[in-house]
Image 1 (spheres, rainbow, N blue to C red):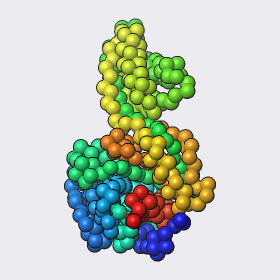
Image 2: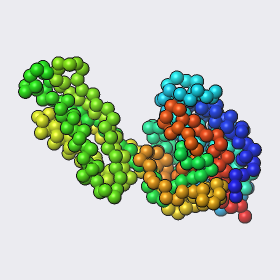
Image 3: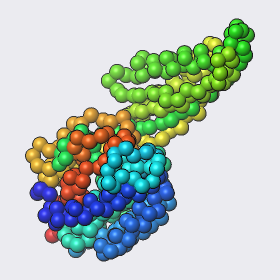
Image 4: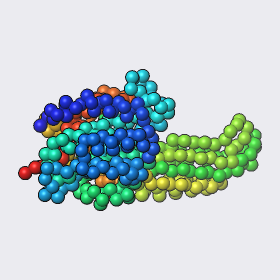
Length: 389
């Protein structure tokens, strides 16, 4: 069961769609052009139902098989949004919009799901219903959560749901997944420190927030090193420090921004509690006060074991023997497909993008050679999960 012949025939045209999306990137929920094209094409393909505005700007296309007696309903999701990055590829199809680019390959994800929708609407060689889910705002906006809260699963009767992400460094035609946690929960925090400012020549009269912040960063790193079980995973990163404005003034306040990444809810709870404790105690030790604004973001993306096995077997049939890495290490990046997996059983898989720049890099570009594999994966997943009698 290699790449489907009809899909191979469509690959060049799907690549044209992909490059058009790449030239015209849109951020978060503001994906009106992309969503409009998706809806228009799905109607042209003959999808049975096309609904816009799910989760603000999401699009859902419903395709019924030749038979629906099985009652099975499978959901497949692609994300549509880009990133606020200036592109540096120099390609003919580079972004036309300064400060925005498809640096994560969502242009490819969307185009591949459109290709699968076209194929399935043409052939309908399955018994059940395929629900194509085109989601906005994966890059920090929680579009997956918005679609779920908007009644996506209930309205369209989705029973199981699947997603993928391209992965630079994995060869084109190869895949990787694992049961259980695959991508991390992502939380964000702001730390506000209040000291006592004054003249730099009289530090004894001040409470130096620059000194407090220096101690804080060291102490926060010790949480992972000395509080988290070494057999479990966590990351605490301080990504912004702001205090002071000039050479001879000890600053009154300081502000830090950071993120926590975890693969386990107990570790997530531990990290949040310890961050609060460390900030309070370190600040108090220096005579300052500290306040933590901690916000929980995307949950852990965790694959159902049975559905991961099924998705991997379909991928192996497309890519060939030994094309699937079944025990890929979990990634500490986050993914809001996690919200869909919390609402329905399913699985998420990485698909090879070849030897390209990494995602979120200004030189990244989705590899069009991967298109036939992604489209075939979704088409065969539907036909295998809901076989026509």
